[in-house]
Length: 546
Ligand code: SF4
Ligand code: SF4
Image (tube, rainbow, N blue to C red; front, side, top):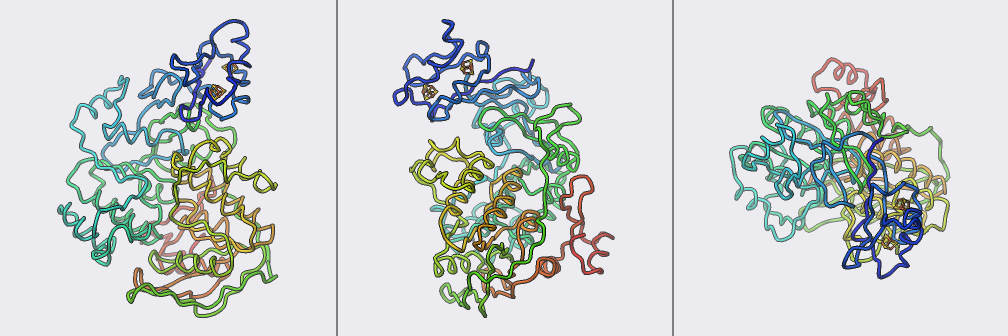
């Protein structure tokens, strides 16, 4: 039988504010055995996993959702690398940098951050039985990390920061990521996409051997995503790169091999051996590791393109507008645009052409509800926004598994959790226009598939949704039409119009010179190599997604 794990969240467990319900209901305690006891300082419940029968009563009764009890899905006890404590999160296996570009694909909360901290040397592995691990940790840490969350505070001007780091790759990186355009800007004034480009360059220009890029594609448009991937393939194939991201088509394009990270969020994570990337993606979506004969999810994850419905009842009119930022930037919507009731319109285009600025303007002008690109953290409890008044709210909370977050503060959430709660908050407002700006940043694949379905459900209530996102798979599976902004990044943008989905995608992808085919096994989108026969054929046919 696989090992049982009991986790008590130290932030959530508050024995001085509860009736010790866990201890009262535990059937093993009732038999006078000490399955659940309080710690010596009486500040935390402690559960004995060997005594626990897994009945689950304490999980249901704890008023703060502090307890999780699960069985490991695989016999990996001998692969334990790190545990935060007896009743705390455990990581089995480790994604290690090796020569080449390696992906890491997994669910939020399954140990990605722990893996990163171990590689950085911020945590020390507690068991090291595998030779390669020992070798890695015996070397002087030689790893550069591009962190997931982007922090710009007090770092000064872009040009000064990058020139201070320097290095022989800097000039190329500046050119690849158009950083000279940003050199005189303060980091604190950059958009998410601009800041991401600077942070990626700041990591890659260093003279090190191993690089870990944590969600480097978040906030970047398709053109920058592809440029970055091409740059990595050209210049880093002989180095050690780990790329953690949830954009499957880019992982498939960029990475030689990929680790799968699975488990129970907040309880444990298991890192698989690395597999050829397409095989890893297939197994991750299926929830079954063929090589290790482990089923880690009952249901496969499937992308479901929406059934095409024609919506013609006008709902909101986005007025013509011109918004200027100083003398150096403007975005223009030359004519009125009507959004129909119940439709989702994707707002797409290059970074820095004013998508977020324009969408936020429309939301404010028309009394809409906005989920902004950059998210606030506060000391308020999540409980304050998790209302369950409508069937949609109940479904969202269930499908996104956010109920268990209600006694955390926004400050304590992970990036993916914060994203889910802020999207919920925006979609809970009564209005006829929702603006949802980059909701998939930091969200795992399962969350993206569920969110796509939930946005479709929300639109059926009759409001219009304006959706900005750069995950093409997510956009194509979610929207009815596409509003395209064209222009010159960081200088100006202009709405080119609202197009039927097929026409819009052709216009967008021809601009980026990208074509996609469908993976026959999973139906997901796969990016064609530039210059490949497939790419040329699709371009000639004028159909950019096969
Ligand atoms: S686990 Fe829950 S019920 Fe048990 S002491 Fe902690 S807060 Fe109270
Ligand atoms: S799950 Fe385990 S710890 Fe919780 S009540 Fe049941 S036996 Fe006790």
